[in-house]
Image (cartoon, rainbow over all chains, first blue to last red):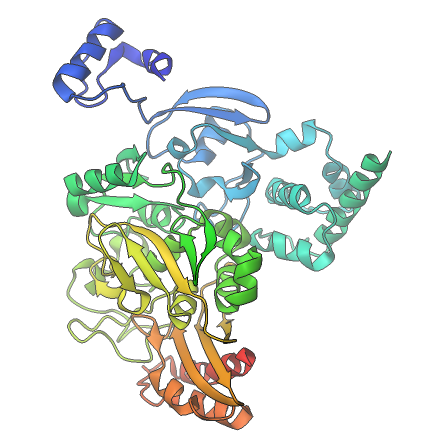
Length: 199
Length: 324
């Protein structure tokens, strides 16, 4: 924990923002003035594992996870549409749960493992091919959100039926109206996964 | 979103201490799906100076059966409650309510405590940038009385100030029907007494008080419970009217009943008249119909929401019948 703390700029005191030349000076100050030990890690320093890659970031309290993944890490598969948690286009998988990155504060995600549509594509997941084969998109803006949600479903339930798929995807909106294609694509991906496993 | 101080609390004591320091200038954040929307839209009369995250406190996320009660941690995600086998088997109303709230993604983020502590969804209150300085923001009037009130209270406004915004929670009526109590850092409150109508608050909680746990008694005998939600869409939508009921039948007669409606009044509305009408009766189409009729006997709809009275009547009837 202290090792992380050393990386903050200027050895700033997290309680009163006083600056110190050395880390030891800061530590002595915190113990003497604020009477706490050990030194807490500043809240803004987080570690994220995104698509298997570890990142250390200093984030502002009001940054959403979307802003960090899309703007800072440059993974533009995470899409912004409603920004109010009502459309599903910013879905990422965090610790196995499909969650909305626009309604999650990055500062609260320290140590989390995150998967985006890019990671799912790089891993060669059959969802990508089946989504293409079934023409599951027109403009394609909502597609990464659907893919991440479907991947989270298949991780938990490798053989979902059509109604389970419809239920799992009920939080994703598509203004082009591609809804009927999604269960077909996810069912095919599930079949392909099963065949791959049985080989 | 404008900035704020942020604390990832490590213990409940730490969270309470920070809240004590900030008073009503700080807010607790758990799932965040309600709070962040309010911050983005700038609808709080006082933008919080600090957020205290309680997701960083470990061991607040559990469902376990202890002796005769089911204990649910405050930070248990709605989705986990909806799919939990014991909840589904013995507390059907709660599993159904948790599974019908919001959307799948929001259920993976939103917590049970957050669902009962959520703010009202009145469209005047929620209009961005404090466009309508209504009573619930400390302003002078309720805009729904003369405005469009198709989703507002059919059981009158609050006595003191006349706010007609309804409480939107799906799990609250289920927990009330199941006779749950809520434990906080200060006290234990029956869920029925948990709700209040205050400026930008819907609960009796003090500024430095945090919900920690729910306790639901195992129903005596073989009581059945059920929850029905009517909304305009199947998903990502709030209830127009919802209802939860728990009915115990002994020797073919209803021995005890608890019926609670929500989204129809400023707080979850326990339909005591419906309970009185059904207790001692056989449960059938006509007695359930009579209970539905009693549930709405005190309704005083506004100009646009008369349809909600009919909805409430039918939903009470169907929910009671589904408990058998």
